[in-house]
Length: 281
Image (tube, rainbow, N blue to C red; front, side):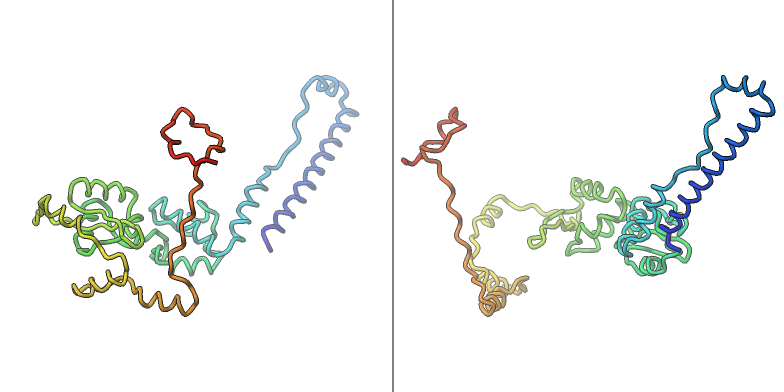
């Protein structure tokens, strides 16, 4: 039977029991008035006893019902968020108590959680599983040093709660480098080997900064190939595909900025240097 039907039956039972109790209390009052008038007269001055009320848990039950009727993916997210937040191994009963997802009753949720790469199930309990099993700063540094070509910070964010603070501490100590990826703009952590201290003269840095790169991506890719490096992009292929589909590769013309004229209402008149190039209307 659906949970909503149980709620409806529960409400009806509440109403029926309430009316029964009211009628019983009324009949007892009339009987006491006929048999013992002295007691009744003395009791008239007292505050009548409150009617018996059943606990009204309807709102909580409706909330639980909405969670258990949600799609499998939504229920799984609640469980995974709980495991990530607590960092504890929880039984299905504990999960049900904490976030109202009944993995025992919902086989789809149970099976998909067991197969999820972010979840570890040992046969009794569920726990969160990060991509890299590191627990502290020393293990984090050891892991980064194994990835000489860099490791994405996004793959480390959920390793343990203070991992981001430890990354910044390692960077401040000069033990790692945190550099942004050109394509995705995401940080990459690189090991900084303390056995190989490197210092670069300022004139060499200046020469590097003065190198002018080709403006066309085709020329950049050719230069990379000349130096034995494989370009991450394929501009020729992309342009030919765009021509087939009729997409123009020419950059869009920039919109002309609205220049200030004498007719413009000025609100910063106290800054005259802003309006030296006013056009005549």
